[in-house]
Image (cartoon, rainbow, N blue to C red; front, side, top):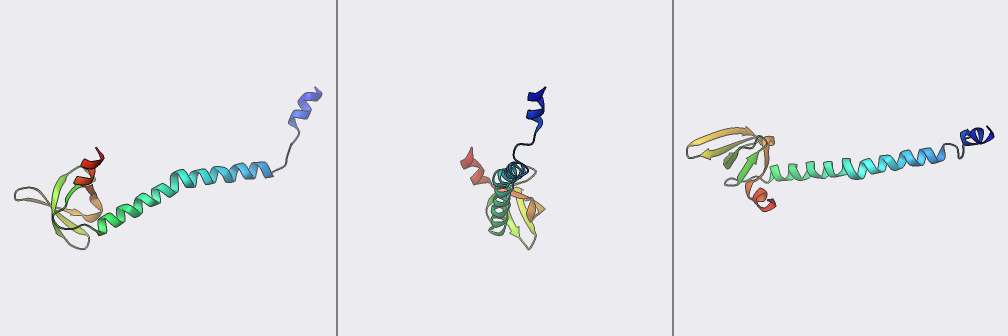
Length: 102
């Protein structure tokens, strides 16, 4: 009975609990939040550097060549004479960059 009561006694106060909670927050930051922010920053930079003639892939998977770029709108030619208008944020990546990754 005495051993059960000794095990239930607080052993260090709140400091170890606070340190563990802080360590969990740091792990979340370095493994989840920070990489996501970097990815968003790189994606924004890519969209700002779009130029005519680039082969791109949209978020929906449409492949095509950029033939027109305005403020927030891009025109993609998917086949000869077939042009589609997309929002600039719908461009996912450059098609040649995807080919290099595979």
